[in-house]
Length: 281
Ligand SMILES: [Mn+2]
Image (cartoon, rainbow, N blue to C red):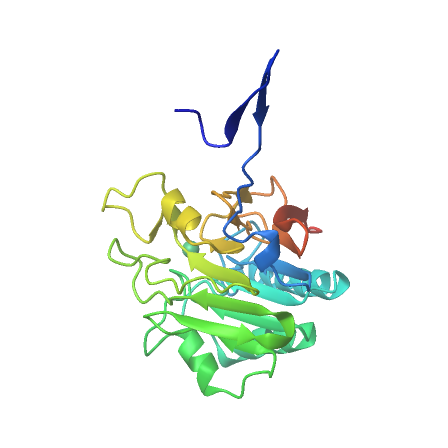
């Protein structure tokens, strides 16, 4: 038996071995990618209204710093002409936030003008008393889309040839798997998922909100926007690009820089991600 693709051509005086390469088609291969490119700014772990998340002289100063960091993200998304802004959980530090703080977040999101998709995280999980539920009861800016379904929900933006799936977190526990029930990737669309949880090589059943390499690789999605770990880290698996975006303001210490992830989805080469450093707030 010869390996697949190998053939022997026997002629009168010589033996020629030729190898016809097999073309492997990635799950989101060129033929199934949209013709339209897509630019995404991916943020998360903003922790608005915390008074301890980062360094500052007093709690009010820390809260202002976090607000300025979120405004920096919005400015960047506008400047980068992003088609989408993704917020992968923990926009707020807790669900005990003032109406004024919600007003601030909504006004900034409206200023962004591009489509904004947000999910809950373990600091702002979704239940009846959650801050995102309170947000949803308001008149939302027309560009804001909250994914609050506990079973999972897909948003489709036909003009962007993009579909976005996520499953909201109610409780940060081992029973909650952020990528469980992922809807199948759709050919000819950009397939994007948001997931707030902990990347683990193997799920031992003990860690809360686990996300495994196998789940990312099996998704067949173009990009998985991860939230929860506060430092940028690319975690692409198989043909799926994935990353933690990092927090927009360095947590707890003045060292390091805040980041967001810039994702470019190209009809020719698929999704790529890189960290963009933000000015100190
Ligand atoms: Mn978190």
